[in-house]
Amino acid sequence: MQKSGFYILSGIVFSLFIIFLSFIISNYRTSLQTNAQTGAPAGDFSVQNSYIFASPYSSYADGKSIIRVTIVVLDYQGNQKPGLKTSLMSSGPVDIIAVNEVTDRSGRATFDVTSTKIGDYTINALVSNVSLLFPVSVSFQ
Image 1 (tube, one colour):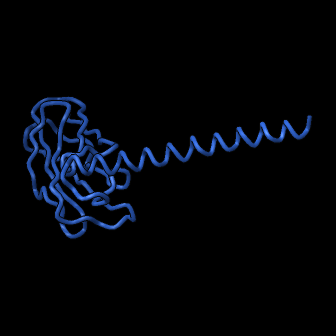
Image 2 (cartoon, one colour):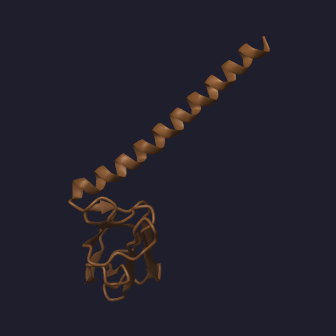
Image 3 (spheres, helix red, strand yellow):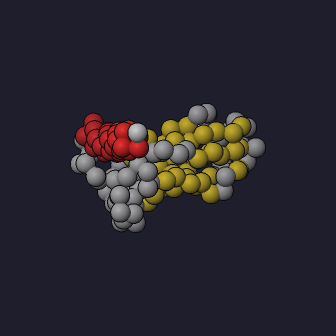
């Protein structure tokens, strides 16, 4: 009875290991396919490590007051990735002015955002036509 219980437990542990390994391989293949679809070499940048931020997060809706949005593009080791084309998408009526849409040597691209409409808007970053995981929220008042 004890021996059969050991074999059952061993089978369950082995099955869980295979499921975990399949999940890891599947995620790795998905990241390679995403980069292949955009024409970027596999491993060129990391969607997980790259990020977007805004400063300030809130400004006046007068069409003149600027919120500076910065995209930082990093590879899988956390190194900056220069020379990649970026863009922004907004959930609402904002004007987006590219200050430098191609990442510089520090992996940064910057945009100025203005609006004449009061509201809270979500800004998404695209790097080589691939959306980063987390957007940034800005507010015009």
